[in-house]
Image (cartoon, rainbow, N blue to C red; front, side):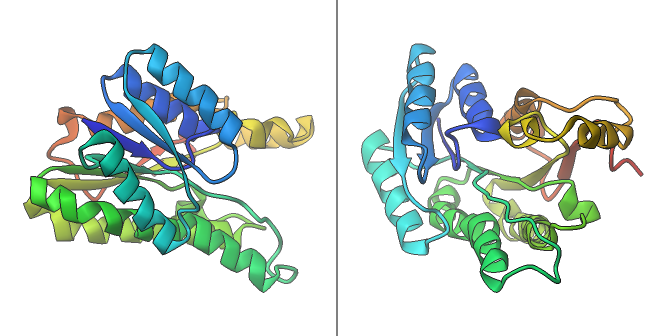
Amino acid sequence: MLALVTGASRGIGRAIAIELAKNNFDVAINCSKSLDSAKNVKDEIINLGRKCEIFQADVSDYNQAEEMFKSIKSFFNESVSILVNNAGITRDNLLMRMKPEEWQQVINSNLNSVFNCTKSAIRDMAKNKFGRIINISSVVGLTGNAGQANYSASKAGIIGFTKSIARECASRGITANAIAPGFIETSMTEILKPEIKADILKTIPAGKMGSPEEVAKAVIFFAGESSSYITGQVLAVDGGMTMI
């Protein structure tokens, strides 16, 4: 069975791609720029005994996303059954200082890419009467965050999109779920000052940041048969930050 992970060259996307391979999926990995890093991911997946190929495309561009899916189907001789929409960027700024292009870049990369890839995948999933759509949102899509109006809006939009697609596609054997990671130890959090990290940890009941691998384990759950009767849900992987 074939999985596609967008933004798979590093961080959470990398961990997801490798975990899927460990669970016997062949993996198409997408990146827009970090080709060397993507090659390292590909090598690791092939060493695990699974088929893998890199598909370089800007998934915020509809035409590029559509062409990517055609290339994937041609290379693997099968369509994507597991779609993990992970690609995304940040352009943080207070709203009063936020430039229109900072808003639009984040919406394009984080939200439009989910539409582009899901639309490209869903026809074959419906034809096959099977599909798993797993969208990577964020806890800030649930809570908001100062300085991240663009990012929070894009991640909240992913949640609404996921729930709508779940309603549309449930009768066709397709599930759609979202994962909302909290603070995860990646290159983005490594650069934070110690005092900022200390403040963040105070908001996490578990008292620690999560790992990309912990997010990847949640993806495996939604990709597998154990979650076949679960759709339209949001799973927060956040150490308790958003518990009600």
